[in-house]
Length: 333
Image (cartoon, rainbow, N blue to C red; front, side, top):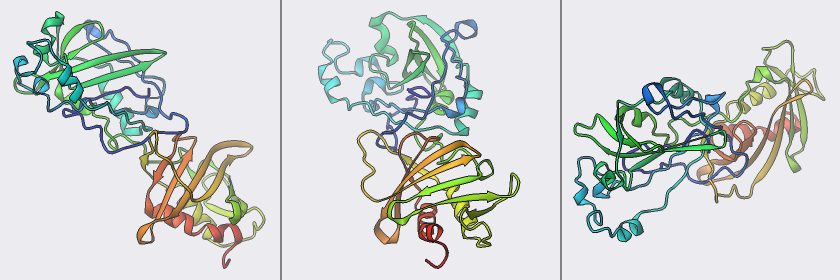
């Protein structure tokens, strides 16, 4: 589960990024170490924190009085009677978002890790957990690493809302800064990777395009590294700027949403693009698009960089696919 499974967002709305990555899971695991300085819970990042995918797993339990900041444990139905069945039946299911996180997430990890707490309060008897909002926590932070998993439960806020109660996997109760919790709100698109391709045009010297009935063609970059002139392999004397413009648009394709489990891409025109550097593949891209309302293009992409299927921005995708017939057949076709 990439990047941890945080839910530091009081109220627990999991955000607007529905669906699942039907392809490879792009994120990667945040490393973790429960022992920070002075016994504080800590988390050590993995080898490439910029590639981590975050998860938002809000409980949506904000309207439960027991998890409301400042609320009394006596306000929670069933806490004093031991009957919690009605409370649990009313809770909505947990929702998980998966997405590839970008450079902003790496900056966050560098600033937050190891995760520190304001104060360690020690172990708490189970019959006292409700006083801290930890019987039905309002959020959870889970870190998966090396086949292990650590889950921290987030309780209600303290007086003044500067800190909140957090229960670590070893049963230690701590106070964590609400500012830290706000930073750990991974709801998309806050830390979402927007690029469809991780490489730049300067790192690629050949693009192989196959688009079914539209045809197939290879485009090569001429000149030294950094040269932006692209021409068809079968017409290297071409001075047409169309090909260079189209390649520029390829690298500007932007991600607006990571499709989650259960959401289908649907039917449409299909293209496959292979990006090469010499004899080595750099990335492979699949595109599916169709006409939508008001003349817009609805497009989806899947690359090795992002892993699963993503929805693409209408403007850049529309410009890109509108030039495809000319790129494959030559200007004027």
